[in-house]
Image 1 (cartoon, rainbow, N blue to C red):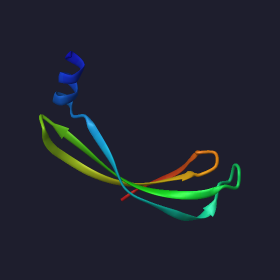
Image 2: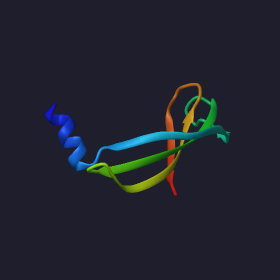
Image 3: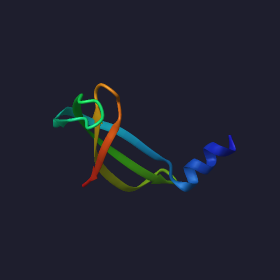
Length: 72
């Protein structure tokens, strides 16, 4: 119960996937296809939105290795 209160006060971060699409190139480790996932993360303090970040995460479909994250 106390941990939930700390998250509300300190600003828990919530992420949501906006979209997924095939990216160009291949995984340097196994040669699998690469997928680009657009993610929005929102930090809140006391229920009020503080900031919104958009990220694009790249990962391999075969070995599930995370490749690169670009912030915009």
